[in-house]
Image 1: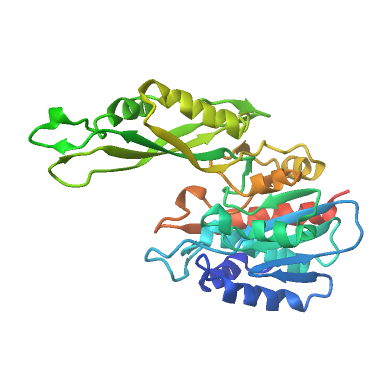
Image 2: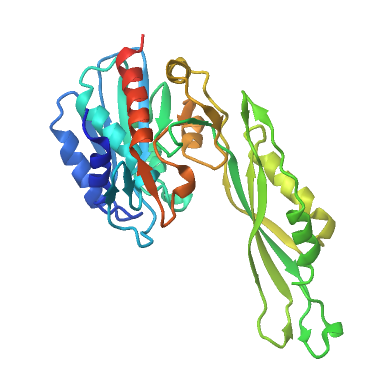
Length: 354
């Protein structure tokens, strides 16, 4: 087996901030182009490598090539069995695992599709999976999918939905010396913020996975001058909801929560909606991965691209090396153990499946 931590360090050393992945994808394309058992297709800055042995099952191994911008951690740094650097956990460790499997598993027991896609860390509209879906949906065909998102070598099943809504409250301008002549829109936020802060999370359990919902005020905009009573206040709210709710039910919940303090002149609109994904571990390949390796299974509390595969009718789960809680931080790092654990489990799956 290759030194996977050293390989990951090599990938981290190649910058690939969102929208700037092209040179990194060029390198991946060169690395895979000489492998006769793979058919290679590039669509923009998305790269798909596929085996085509006509086997009964096709497993998709998918990972995004972009990282967030460095935060003083742009250089790869190896310290013993730990790699430090932006993207080490999210998710160049997962890409290293997939790349090594693509290089070394010449005749898998299932057909494989390696999907290296761009622009996951930015707005949904830019996501490379959408580009592939629109331009070459055939490249996303498969029986099930595994995303190499950092999960600490556990299975993080499904994902929660993400809903962003914007509330605009109306007031009336006045001079701050005579505030009784106006109506302060910022003050109108008080009962709404109190209700949000008091929210008790739903914790539904779905297929043995317990999800924890959340709703947060994430920004407030108001005021035109230091001596003017504000006539409008804009509140943005982010709601994470479990996959036992539809997007429509999640929106209805937020509207009901806000309703006691809203008036006809106020406006509550959806800014962005990302549907959830159920645990999806029923497919034999995914169930076999869990059982053969005794993997911990827990709910994915955030949102990931498993939901995109779910929308395509493809069962998908998150399974990758690295601690998800350090992703996007200056302390992002990756340990050798989780990297090699994920690699061993996936190699066993794709070489011994019957």
